[in-house]
Amino acid sequence: MSLLEATPELDLVVWPDDRSCDRTWLLGNIPGSTGLVVMLTEKVDSEILDRAGPSLKVVSTMSVGYEHIDLRAAAQRGLRVGYTPDVLTDAVADLSVMLALMTSRNAGIAMAVAKDGQWPNHPWSPFALCGPQLSTMASSPARKAGFLGFGRIAQATLARLVSFGITHCLYSSNPSSPTNHERDAELAKRYNLQSVTKVDIDELARESDFIFVLAPGGHDTYHIINENFLKQMRRTSILINASRGTLVDSDALARALREGWIWGAGLDVVEGEPNVTLDHPLVKEPRCIILPHIGSATLETRRAMAVRAAQNVIAGVLGGNMPAEVDL
Ligand code: DGY
Image 1 (cartoon, rainbow, N blue to C red):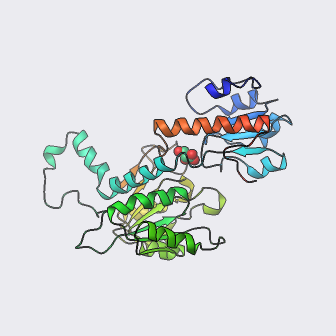
Image 2 (cartoon, protein in one colour; image 1 turned 60 degrees about the vertical axis):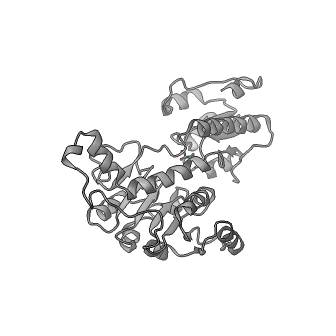
Image 3 (cartoon, protein in one colour; image 1 turned 90 degrees about the vertical axis):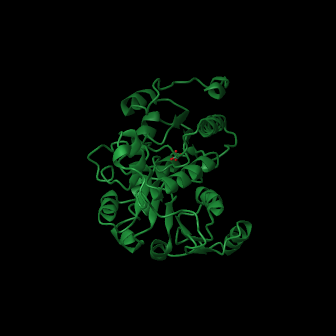
């Protein structure tokens, strides 16, 4: 806000509440705007863009994901779109590792035992609350980390997993983009890994001990984690999703957990969020850790995202270079 307020060319109209903006408010206030700053909770479609009218030059989202913006509609109107990559990479990678640990170590069930006053009924016992270990032990086969999507956040997550003794990295990414052998060899060397290998999605499901879903949302990845994928995973494997809920078929995942096709799931995002309530099939699953989309929720990261979103809208309105612009 201080950046925007310090820009004399801007007249600000600001949604007053600390929650996502009502669409009716947005539709009522947007006519004649030059720039629009939104969060991932605001759907920016033709209706919004038409209501803004020809004065609109730029849409700036305070998020790295931009599937809530109709890019084709924006391009047709000659708009520029800004987003906030890079600044949240570390926070989301931290959270991905946290979810892997929480899921594998049954943190959801264990915390409920303590917080619900049930500890006296669950004293220490040899195999109580045990789960598969993230870190590699000399006595167990080397752990394989799998990534669906292998961009900045996935690679930052891999970097963290190196200290857990991960030696093999498998990843599956957009089949139409060529394999970057040079980059993969460089990563393997930098982290002293035995392999960094691009595989097809079925091999990813079959071979990984921990699968991190860190790919963009949208049409191309909708329900890419489905019954077929989950059935190929190992019974001791763990699925983490810190990208978008739409990548995972929730009903198939609930079934996989209920019937023991996989060990557990750690989710920061769920399709249909925030309407995920007690009757949701995944909320009912004890081996499913669910967090309410807090991947980037550190004070430092959110501040950096806000600054970048402000810089992007200012550059878009004034016709300068944006720190991060979507290639339309
Ligand atoms: C993003 O920026 O797209 C993230 O999901 C927010 O945490």
